[in-house]
Image (cartoon, rainbow over the protein chains, first blue to last red):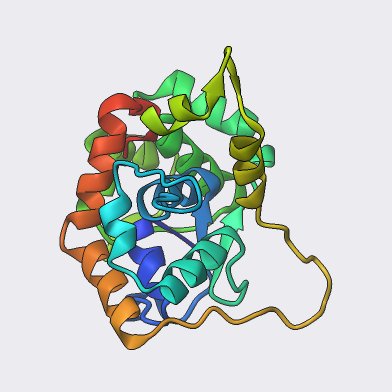
Amino acid sequence: MILVDEYAALPALVGQAHPSLGGEVLALTYGRAYRATRALLDPGSGRLRTRGRFTRLAEALSPEGLRALLESLADPDPVVLRIVDPRPLIRAAGAIQNAYAVSLLQAETLAAAVTHDWPIRFADPASASEPMRRAAVELGLDLDTI
Amino acid sequence: MAFLDRHKHNGEVDREFRDWLRSLAVHHDDSELPRPQHAFSDEDAAYLVRIAGDGTLAAAFADIAATEPELAG
């Protein structure tokens, strides 16, 4: 299992995982799945005619594509991607956030890697901010960008 | 939050809004039955790969993080 960011998870969900991931099953934290859902699956102009900040992103997809993305982000094919259960990570994430200047999203990622002994592979170098890298080094984690 | 305001009356949201929120739930099937496959057209797949790599998604995340720093990173 390889822990990834959303930039690596999205291509994998559509069958185009980065070759360096070697066909491994990927893992995405709950917080990252939540953030991607917020950005991509804004409910938009449904029955209530609502529009959100990111509706334009969702509107570029076909209705079938949007539905497939909604379903695959909430309940992905487990041979491709798994959403990490956040419950076992609560104490580790809390301790990490007390020790390092990282966000809840980053702390959950670090906690998942520590708890499950998973490598972390980010497709966007910005996901590996300096505080994140420092924490990963001190925690003995295998963090790299692809 | 104008859309919420339209469905809020006397400090409470209306039934339509609550029904809509309930409709967003994704119910997981933990049985061993074959899972539905999520098919993407070539165009949708190409779009999702593009926005994951060209900064479009990153900009949306930065927008979220600007008001919700716990979702930064």
